[in-house]
Length: 167
Image 1 (spheres, rainbow, N blue to C red):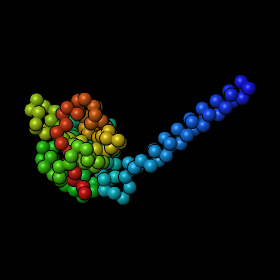
Image 2 (image 1 turned 180 degrees about the vertical axis):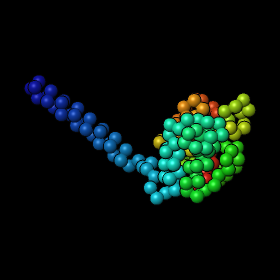
Image 3 (image 1 turned 60 degrees about the horizontal axis):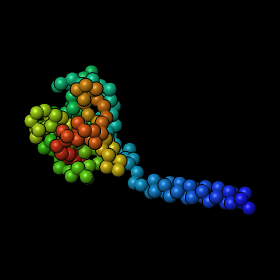
Image 4 (image 1 turned 120 degrees about the vertical axis):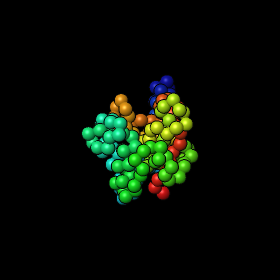
């Protein structure tokens, strides 16, 4: 009798685990995909920006030999026929302002990285949004072109606003 109880408990426990796994799989399968269709201009903007990954930072730089944040934004949007200003403070006046909760891939983020906390000094492009966690690409003075998360303490503190260039 004790043997039968152990087998029943074994099957009961495994059935519950399997049921829980099925619920998780169903949940994740129903989540909205963050994939961007290749024919969407946003895909090309992000692909262009990512093609600069590893390029060293150079103040005023506009080439693969050295680039700054605003040139990265400029080149990425130029790839889809959108001419952006060359300076991040001027880029910050393009498109429409977006609520941080509504940011999506392709939106441009603006930051105040100097002592003047409200002056745009840095920009990046949102590459992915996953359950509110925002990933963006930018030209970092220390790492060159790289991706970071807006949830990073430094970037979150410096963040000013986001703008949507492509509708």
